[in-house]
Image (cartoon, rainbow, N blue to C red):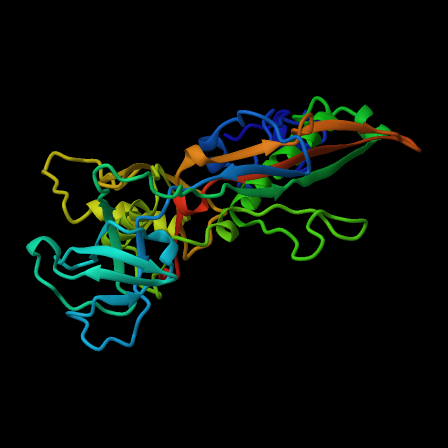
Length: 378
């Protein structure tokens, strides 16, 4: 027979006699990971000004571009123009890219080179406008005076700091009442706002851009910093809506290797392109009957041009892959301005403050990094 005595359900649906049973855990589903910031790690030093600067240098170039569309005989002309005559000196051995012919430079006049064609018994071959001309090296005469000094000028680059801030405010009553799963409402709000600001810092590191006018900031202009995508402008591969494949990725890395002494060690992608990279290994994998786990994950990509950790970040645009030399990237706080809580004066029955931090990104040698853009996203 059914139970007819006092039971919990006899109090009705609202259960007014039963104490609440609420978990001590507040569950958060909103994304707040900062994988690229975690990978780069703590800054080795702090910025000392709102405009942080660094110096960069290059070696004297060892290649140029032929700039001459007026050949009378491209296979025998001993004089032709290049884009930068200052790159060359008498005695240079030069060779057109893709050609086996070696030439000896005998005179440099402005941007015009005079050469010995088919030097050293090599066979003369046709040259072409816009063809790369590589400098193999210079041959000096025995006993000759020292050549004119050649040098490069260091360049001075920089990035502005950006202030990240979020307000925290709670009423006196809200701080006094007993809360479910939260011991201190003010501390809880601090943690929430800090997670949001770190998330924003990672997104700005990747996508941020400085103001085009008054980038130093003013009473009406907010000072912002350049991120990775706006800064990298040398090694950009346009995929023209093609899917990401290993050949596309490897060719982009080869291009960076060709132009810079860079060690690409980080690939940063969003979810769609990460799945494409994972797919590189799918066709070459086999399973046996006893295998019960299917694993399709690439965390490290190793090629001739670098061993790269693959970072999954929501802040990267869907059609983009970042190829980075992490040793040349630092996210720097302004001195004494890393994220911290600053109490504010209250004019009423509440506690107020703000989480505040000021950061910039140091991206040295932008040609040491690369971007693949315009990838298919469906």
